Length: 120
Image (cartoon, rainbow, N blue to C red; front, side, top):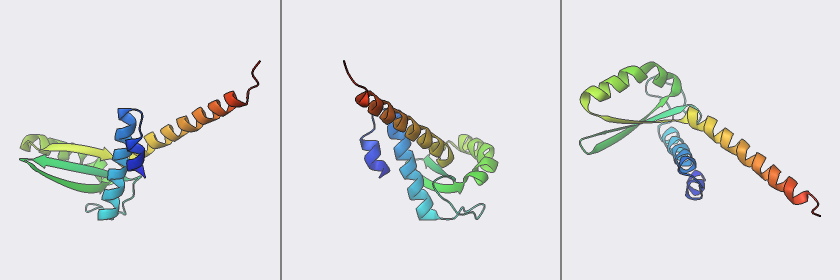
């Protein structure tokens, strides 16, 4: 469903949000459990790490709590080794999705009110 929304997005930020949500869904359903903390992953708590080096890419999913503890060390290690680290944080995407949905509801309500307003 998110991929369809990404294709119909009106802004690049909206498209990136929906693609990120779909990435988190895929990673959480594929891995299911955080390898570090043992916590169950879902789209609202997962942090997806994509690591790229020398033409090879790998992905790992961590629970947000585990990422919060490992982030500084992981970023430093990747920088030292020349590894490109891309982070997709499901927690931030969930917040963005909720804000997006609120804005869409408000816009629909405004349009409905405008259409119901009698015109002279």
